Image (cartoon, rainbow, N blue to C red; front, side, top):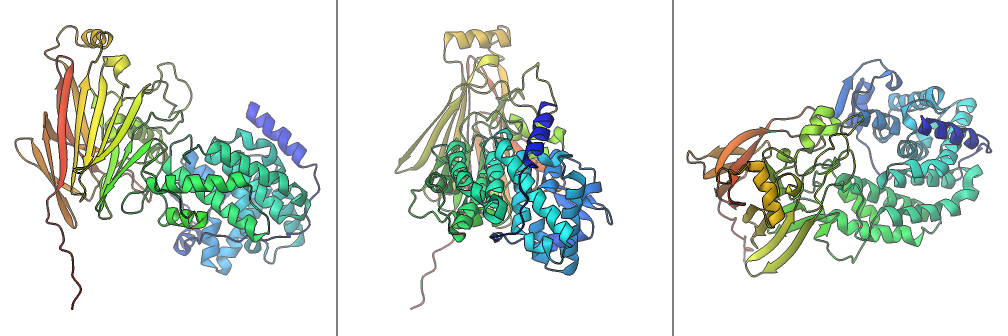
Length: 558
């Protein structure tokens, strides 16, 4: 209610300013949409944020959104990129009808599309595609469009602080900046808004170029938004704020560190793999040269050798609704193919899937008696998913390189309050990328921790506590365990790996997995190594080893 009141006040004040009369600078789109997606959209197949509604003949503003993410994507107008790519009369008519329809239905501040980040995204899309929207439009519709753009911009100048930290505030500020670049009545605001975007970029991207959400896909979107804004300012003859450019120099190496060998992004904390080519596009637009390579970003550590890349979550989850209890979990890809995967953004499906994908048991790490290393508070209220109230208080990570290969030693105390146990994980990657090993231990290192553990097992230390080390396989990976439960054979379309372990017994279980391109969840498998903590100690060692012979190096023909 308070946010609604603030929004109404902001919009009332924003309506008092002069209406623009002309577009004095036309920003150019820097991302080419998908013409096939446009044809599907025109046929009534609305596919947004991982969900699809098939409603031929039904306009977008009559739809009942299946998820919050779908609703915000619909009102964010990113689909204008696709309609522009189609370049047909039907696509132009849809762009015009749906834009003017939105203004008529929601332009006074009603509806769900007025979150500052969504409004900023929508305003930027409108201005980028103004020639498509205004082509042949009646003068009255053009005036309504210009007034609505100005209303958006003045509203965002006040409301950007209420956007979600990180990407949300960047999107809100960028929308207002584009309006000041494009519209004659807002041009006097341009110096102030250019400075403001630089200040926001400096504050929202930390010293290593990361976002508070720890969401790799959001970092990609933030980098692209800031990079295209910088290129647009330069095209208009305006120098970007130095803090804006410095944020690009920090964020580009961070984004590179979060890419797997197939070019996709690590899927943690509500983020997906990113649209194909999106990360490359963001890095190209940023045009950051000479920056040192980063092997860690936003609490993730990258291990890379040969054609193998592992990205490890080595920090506590963020305090966001989409955070996942994935501490010390990893994704692993080799030769452009995913082998070990994270479950993905379950909140795009529904709240139940969100909760499944947030649990530690959905990630490739150790879970204790199916408990998660981060937990929602017992007194938490409000719609699910809810931010974690209890997260590991101490997460440590240390890297080392030697002649044998690359090492990562990490630990967290997420199970100390409940069981008195510290989880330590050691990872190793050989120089040729064909041998990836790990050791997981649980221990009660102090007298206080042992008392906590004793209370849990009620004096039966010899029986101990059950734990499981899990590895979620990509659906294309076929797994065949041996009868003794000591090893398993993994078969990919063009490779074979062997998984071996010591200290437990292998089981194969079902696991949640959200496809990167959205749609219905697909079934996949987990390798589960079951063990027990006895006498304050439990350990499992394991390894993934490439089983097929390495390809010979081709020599040039003499």
